[in-house]
Length: 371
Image 1: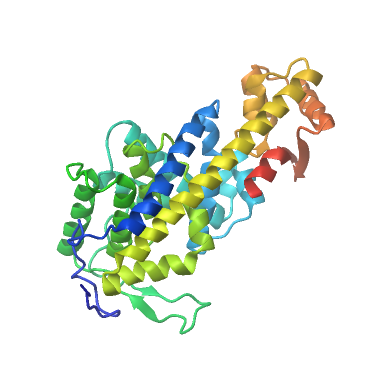
Image 2: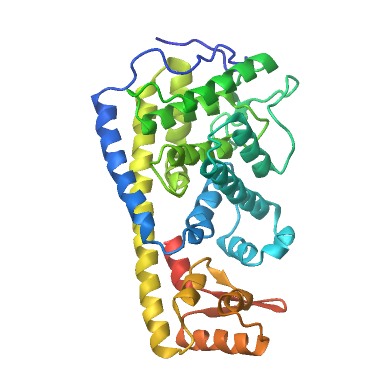
């Protein structure tokens, strides 16, 4: 049934969840089956990584950068890698780089909530949003005249295309319904992947915050998949697919609002899971194979090289001598400089000078992440 609305007026008639009509047909089920299979293969592949913490600065860093890019927040890989490798100096990073790093922090804060069995509560959502935006703000208040406009590169740039619900009681009712929908496992007819897609539309339509809704919503997607045991780590690289199909993303979100047309949106999201699970799977394969090759090469040529050292080199693309010292429990600057030079001579790392500091690049890992 069509839901009539006016773009310039708050969409306070946004229907509650779950959707009333049957929105899953055989076409959606077919794509769901492929998405489920790819996601299961990805989850199994995660166990090949020797240390889950490796994902913080590799796969999740890519997700953080891409998710921010959807919101037109751009940073170079080079600047991002340097900031991550020198966390004590993150405050000197550019504003855009800080935004990306906060996304990563928010993702892992939410993940810790799930691991501690707190679920996806309103507090979890607020915590994620507040870390993304580095703010103490909560649900937007009545005076916030939030609207969604066409981008600068689009026809009729700046035109209002959607006005989200407005009013404290309405927003609270909608967001509480959203949280309850994610928590309700009584309806076994809706698979978690389908439910994630439905909930993502709803969150973006509610638009509960004054800014950062897209990034918050994409983190909730990953947290929900972890909560439902479809992923052990929040590493599905969904933002890559959205960037590559950004126009479709917004068009199909709008089709649900304007016409109640759920099918194209559900098909889009199932395709997104299929593609990104497949892509992330190969990314893990490449990282593991390269780790094995580097370990063998390092051990053949350096007496002190071992598995722990090798893992440190693949924790993040840019490495500083201190990380190596922490693993080897050696603090001598002379010794560490010697070790870094030996790895440089072998081509395992390459130095890059920034002012008075020297970073060491794992070019093989960078090649994989940026390939």
